[in-house]
Image (cartoon, rainbow over all chains, first blue to last red; front, side, top):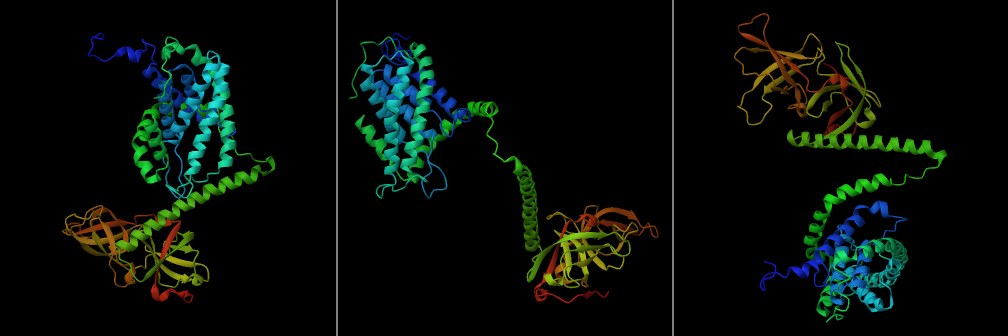
Amino acid sequence: MLGGASSIDVRRWVGDDGVMRWPVFAFLAFLLLVLQEGLGTLWSVGGHSPSLLMVLMVFVSLWAPSLTGAYAALALGLLTDLSQPVYPAGQATDVALIGPACLGYLTGAYVTQQLRGMVFRHSPLVIGVMVLIAGAFVHLVVLAILTARGLPWLAAQPVAGWHAADQLVARFFDLLYTAGVGVVLGAVLVRFHWALGFGQQQGKAAYSWK
Amino acid sequence: MPVLVVVLLVCSMLPARWARVVSSQPRHLLAAAMAPMDHVLKPLADKLRRPPELAVELGNREEYERAQQQIVELQFKLRQATQLIAELSQVKEQLRLTGVQLRTATVTSWSGDRLHPTLLINRGTRHGVAVGMVVVRGYQLVGRVVDVGPVTATVRLITAPQTHLIASMIPPVVGSAPREVMAQLRVGKDGLTLEADTNAEDPVLVGDLAHLSDESWPVEAVGFVVGKVTRIDNHPDDPLLRRKVVVEPVRSLAHLGQVTLIVPATAGGGGAGGRVVD
């Protein structure tokens, strides 16, 4: 049933051909999101929390083919956008803005992929450092987009209580915390990288975003 | 990919109203998917790491606890006030009380004297209270002001022996078969209930409400509930032809904390102190 030409190409989903196992990725992303949000009070240190999804984004970008990494980053960005709504000024209720984190994560994935040739991706420390670098881009993009919302054109709907400088400082400490967590989580992810179908596609990756 | 980037950029700049339309469904879907696990993890996280207590200087601990106590009391009072406002609005609307003001008063004492059962309230001439004003609690008729001082007033309860009460007893539920029996009420032997004599064929049932329909009372008091029929016995003097109906106030008049004064518009400015003349 699985071998038929017209049947669904199951191998693509289980990673036999070296492609990332999307179901495993989806499960992992959901699990990390639940851990990130559900254990929020446990994670919080001085009002700063790590982003487990960002660690996963860096890990996937280090290991997966470029385009796969880009789509994975978009998916993780979408989850971040949906789970972290903002309060537009003058609005009584919050709203999940789809876009800022998607684009931020996409940029982060791109930066990671540009640098991954120079690093030893089996090292958890590298994941921590890459989180620091890619995360800086992620936050800068998010910050730029949300600040641009306050400009007197297009939506002209700033986020309530938004101060770019305060956000920069807060996000810097978030990033440091994420990088620290990234070393530990990275060690686990590297240990079980085979579960995502990585490690079999060496030399096969399509390094193209087109 | 470039198209996707442009779409996301546009989405990022959407006004909140449109952004909500785009993200509402997936957001709620995600929340629904996460909810079962969040319900397990959140208490676990809270248990493992309790939220930091409000830092209180040891010297201010008592003050903090007093403030907490005060907050609880204020919340209780607020609940009471809200309940009272709702009750009064309902009374005013249903009894179509127009041209009157409703003023609340706190009962400071109750006198259980059988001949002169009274309440003392903390409102007097300074608050516009005058002799003869009607006092109620929700739908329950309580009595009339019989004596007024500058800041207090005495209310004679409807269970006082000399009170004249004619009430019509009707079913409490709207839509029941229409029936009405008018009777004069007198105070029972226990001093807490009222009694009326009716004919054996009068359609009075236990549970009926006795509404004041006495023209000797101010017009704004007519319609208020005097009590509820709790027992119907054969009349001791004429058991075949007459019945003795026992009416009990819906609220215990001895345990009232607050009452409402019905102030006619003409008496709003205040009245002179004095005593009511029967």
